[in-house]
Length: 230
Image (tube, rainbow, N blue to C red; front, side, top):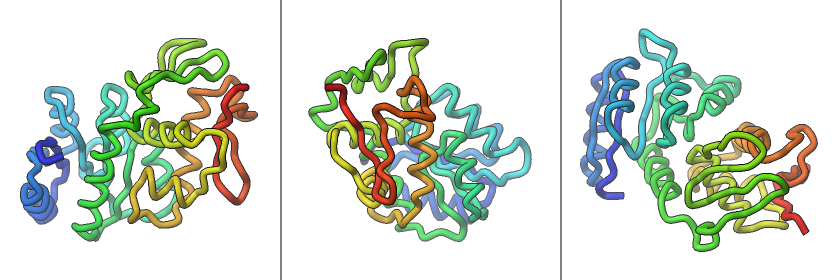
């Protein structure tokens, strides 16, 4: 992770200075953008390992910018915002964000999330260097793609991490807490809404009938289970 390249998109000089210092101290390469438009242009013209995006800047809607970045890139995105409502978190995750941090934030906590996302983005478990067939679709974990009944579907970093972990622990119940800690990091609290949003995304890509899933099952009050075909 020491050579990872990170883009900070924020118009607050104090936030930029604080994040730049923290990231540089940890050995990351840091670029900055002071507007949503500049941030979007930078992600289109250069490759980054992670983007930290403030969504409440003047100009284009930050959620829309997140969607546009996600449309052409699987780069992990951490959203920064002063908004704390669950509907705002859900909207950000549905737009493709991988993490959600509210201001004012703890720099060590944010650095923990950065490192967790970069760690999940590399070195998958050995089992996941293979392919997995679920009915009429095939999951290629090396390419991070789902192929089958229609056009190829790409997996976002968080979708990949979630599906990878469930595949490694197939046919058993994985609790909400376990998934949150393994996929979002040990600093994550009880935000079960994160899981619901991403599970809905995965079901739309994996299941023929997402509203009546055959493979990605909900175990009520407990967690989720990936049921493999017999």
